[in-house]
Length: 335
Image (cartoon, rainbow, N blue to C red; front, side, top):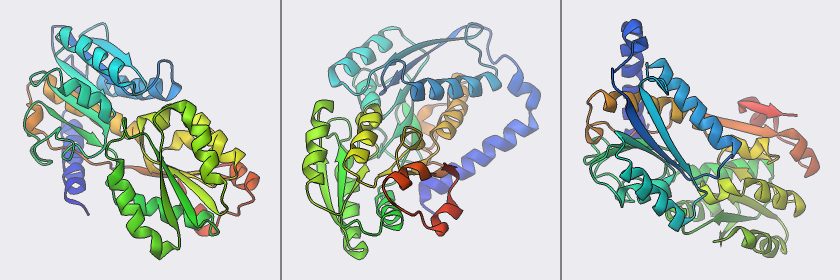
């Protein structure tokens, strides 16, 4: 078990134990003055997935005694990865002088840290915070930031294995990402390129900087046979998930996605993190920081819940038979 994962599980169990021993304290109002939380999300306005994450986060805070309008005020900004707008929103939130800022996705946290080194920051759905320089260590982040990561880069090999299980004929795998919103993608690509020969596949990087380029980029890749897709975890891909799913269907490309909501949008299969769980757990860190804990002393935590989701209707459309061994391990099967 990776070191960070052990830390996450140990901390999570400690928090659960503390909550169980003091249920009345958890429900009590934590403070008698209004606190202000800024939230910057790398996701579009009115995206139902983004709204669902905020709802889970607010519910978890409510269970800890923090209720909007009573002792908590939210300032939420959303943008699907446009760099300039992200920077503008980060500056705007910092100027509001909140007690804490929640940064959702890697570009959002980068933008916030460019504006403040003092306001506490809790990040969610960030990849490689150490490599990006957000923290100086995982067990003890230092500075004004801590939070919850999504994937270790080794997950790339798992996605390739899952794709070969559901579509054994695939010999070429396109890895879709935006270099601007997913600057960490080269690490996933390197891991997957190293794992590819043992699975009898070749990987091809498909960098796309604008949504309008997706169609031509995937059409070019699909011009040769035996292709499959793996869109990497990237706020750009999340914002364009309906387009990616539609293109995979149009060109009959089996695809493995990093999050469940790609599959509920019609994608074939997802093998990844339960994002709702990350947001529930992040509320615990927000609670502790608002009560005086220093973010730099709270360890960065790894995911504790993963989910495999399979869309049998899409599999049938692609002419694929999902192995029973894979169905048996699925957390959800859409028929």
